[in-house]
Length: 315
Image (cartoon, rainbow, N blue to C red):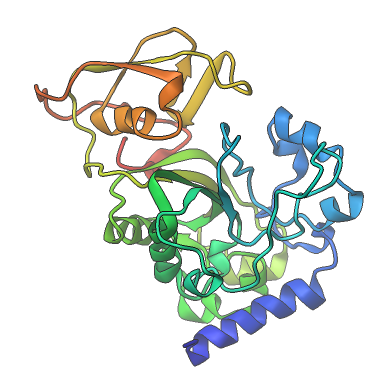
C-alpha cells in the first residue's frame, strides 16, 4: 500500500516531470549533467539518438558499465529511453514495464534474475528508498551489479525541504544522505560499495539557493555488487592483473575512483576488491594471485581526493 505522504511525493514528482519540465533547459540546477560529460563510447552512441530524446535527458551521470553483452539489464526509471532501431537489431531487445521501483514483485521480476541494474537520477525521487534497495538486491543474481548515478547530500534533508515540489523535481529534496545510504545497503547485506565518480552540484537558482544553500549536494556514480563482502577492507596479500580483454576497456579498467587497473600491470588489492573482480561477470578479464588463508590485517586502500569523505568501505 502507498502511504498518504508517499502518494503526495509521487504526485509531486509526476507533475514536475509531466507538466513543468519540457526539456532539460528548464532545470534550475546542475544536478542533471549535459551529455558532454559522458564517456566517449557513450557520446558516440548518442549521435544516433533523436534530438527530442536528448532534450528530455534528465540524468545526473553515466551509469552504463562495460561488459553487458548477453546480460539481463534492468533500468530503474528509463526516462526518455535511449533506445533506437539504428543499431542493427532485427527485433527489439528491450521490454518496458510500467510500475514502481519500490515494488518489482508486481512487475513479475523474479528473485536472482537480473545481471545488472542501472539507474540515472531516479532513486532520489522515491519516497521509500529502503524498499527500493531491498528490491534491487532481491532481484540481482549472486555476483550481480548495481551501477547507478544519483544525487547525494552531506546531511539529512529537513522535512519541509524534502516535501518541497521544486526541490523534489530538481532531485534535491530526496537526495540520499550518504551515511543513511551506507546503512541502508548494510541492512540489505551489502557492506562495501564503491564511488566511481563525484561532482558538486551548483545551485544556479536564487530561490533554491536561499532554501537549501546550507546543504552540500553531489552527483555521484556508485557501484555495488551482490556479494558476501566484509565491512572493512582486509589484507590477504592478493594481487590483481587486468587482462585488457573487455572491448571498450582495452588499456585500463576503472573499478572506482581509486582503483585503476592498467592492462598487464599488477596491483595489490583487498579481499573485497578481489571478490568484485573474480566473483562477478568481470572474472574472465582478471587474474587474481593469492589465497585467503593468511590474514595480514586491514588493507590500506589509500584515499581518493575525488571521493573525500564519500568513499565506500575501501577508503
